[in-house]
Image 1: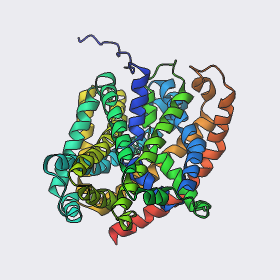
Image 2 (image 1 turned 180 degrees about the horizontal axis):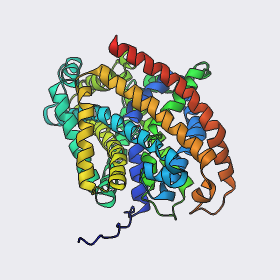
Image 3 (image 1 turned 120 degrees about the horizontal axis):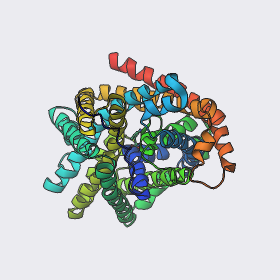
Image 4 (image 1 turned 135 degrees about the vertical axis):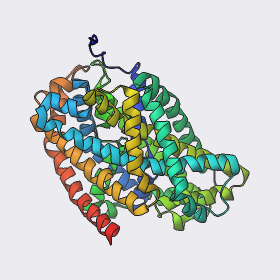
Length: 446
Ligand code: TRP
């Protein structure tokens, strides 16, 4: 008879910095590099930034702290973590998280594949002669599928290496690279003639635009997506933490870093566009990134190639540290719930996710639908459930969250936010996201 070995103790991060950088890596991604600057310019400039920071403080940080509390307190992946504190019924929310992570990673990896392809192509063979035609040619089709596969492989190699040997190591290298690239690009953009118009467009204050419900919902939704909340990513990373971490400080550092990268991304994008007379293309979503910016890099001459490769490398690095955390949610659940070893869990999950994302490599409508369903709707549901759980149902969240800190005064305000403010805002966001989803579904079948 085989001797059964007791389950090994759960792996832990080897350093404080390792956890912090991995969580920042999860948060910083494609959402920061384009969605934030674009929404800011669109919705009131600096006034939107203020609103965004307000939503981060009132909704983002309390929820992040809730995920950390449940993750660290249980030392388990989402299903088991919620079962541990709330019983079987709450545990089911964990399945929503796994579904959300699976679908988000499916399409996110396709877009990440574009960024990796651009970085390598520009470094090796220079900027495309006809950026618009080039993007159209590569965005969907067989080669998009191949780059999606490549990005999934890279992600899986890291996750299969475990917390210390894979995720932490990768974050310690990749995050400083990302910060250096973004700061370097922003500094260079500041030297360009005509960049002032870009700053004015990005940050020009327009308070009339922020005073609408829609913009409030935009700000809340963006903060929420950007901080990787609502699908157990922060929860799962926190399950590898020990009790001596000061969770409120961690959540503050992660949120500030996430905002910093988003803000600086705008200081790269808009000065570049305006310095090269491309302001008309400042509002074209993904097209701006993959079409207008390459035109600007081209105009710069030889150095533009270096900058262009650096810019897309920054995007790819940001995307990679996000795909790693998306996959980790699914993998740690397979390890905890099915008893699989990590490599088996990682490669099996990656295969399923690759297949689910594959149609997005051929169809923008499918990609948009996946985003509206999982990237918005499911995340908001997931965040709402968690705020209700920790706010109302969990036994002693304050005792749990205050481990590693010296006082508990502030935690009553935290629980108040989770009980009333966070659910109220998320219900609003939910209403808007249901409308968007309905429009996407109608467009998909229409
Ligand atoms: N925060 C990521 C970004 O800004 C995207 C994202 C949303 C995410 N939810 C996530 C990443 C969960 C990892 C895990 O691009």
